[in-house]
Image (cartoon, helix red, strand yellow):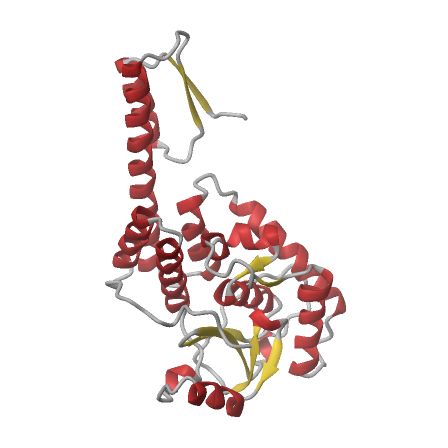
Length: 305
């Protein structure tokens, strides 16, 4: 393994130096070397150092999420990358961007902007689910890895909201008005009316400032089920089956902030189900940064297909 910094000596001076470096630059990979066999005391020092490193990195994560929360655009990709850094502090955002853009360019090569919205969705679906092999992780639905964008892009498996996030990121980079819909017990996408001014034919133009509040919804997309298209009537039937009162926000797109909060709530449930209470409490702390005090949800049950 390659390290950015190597500190030689695991004594008090070495520990202090390592902590000082990590406080200033928490994302550095740091190795602490001790030439002698570790005594119990040194092992205790190293354990303490690891605990302090985790605290520093968590504080850095809180600061990053707070900055995202206060930003004007609350960019979706930035938000999900911050979440992924909880489990993968050395996350390479450029690598994530390259993976998304590779898929996007493959779709763009087949895309013609005079096609109907349904035809455009079929092209996305063919690339995403048949060519690249993305699918819902029904075998290990509550695994925390399903909520981290880098794991989903690598494994091609995810839960409903993270597959929807991948779908949204790709569609919006193709200037298609696809947004998230925050349903109880499920998460889907909505395809809204297109604005001809946003249909840019340049494959390297990555402007994605689309307004989720503009236009009417044409249809919905189930990213967890191979991009299946369905109507408002189908959505109403789904809510009736769940015996849930129909609210307007169940039919209209939600904000990026709502999506990031939902991912964090999913993570709380995932960590609780995998008996990781400390991690669950950490994620509840991140929700507090976004102004939400976590309480028990029943929306994270596996969706009916």
